[in-house]
Length: 244
Image (cartoon, rainbow, N blue to C red; front, side, top):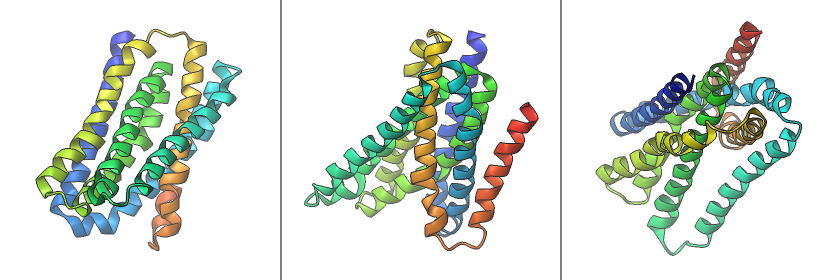
């Protein structure tokens, strides 16, 4: 069981890393195509992440521990405070153009990707189904994350080579690193405590979907963006129904 769970977690986080690399490569080689279609990846990922959180992961965590609702709030607000801290730091450093436009957002994205690796560990330790379900939306949102990191660094004045390298380290490599660091600890805790960590993960997933991804549906005037969102929701619901 330990070996199969670790293999599944490592596979998911490695896949996330690969998808991020694909995003970086795509924006590097096919900038026009990536800019034109990135919103569809974002909308689909938002639909999956929000749906999987509300109809599967949150109820699962509530069933595992009665204190899970409190930790759901901690997960959501924790992600908010992390992002708010980064934004505050950035906004107070206007005199450093490269720091403002590239380095600090890159650190924020790196921290987020590291947490993604931890979320993979938590969800797969609950069950392979829960982990796979969460990974479906998370892996898809790694593509635009790689694109965004590269663009931020380019806009900050970094060369293409440095932008690729820093984007790889922050957005891609940090996810499997988060998995490898967290797995030895999380795999040994009991189901009750795992339920609390699952609730924290659900709060983080809702935050990412609702505040980072979903606003793109409203901001971008793309003809099929709502269709992509609906497709993500539909796939999530179908998977839950098939499990039931």
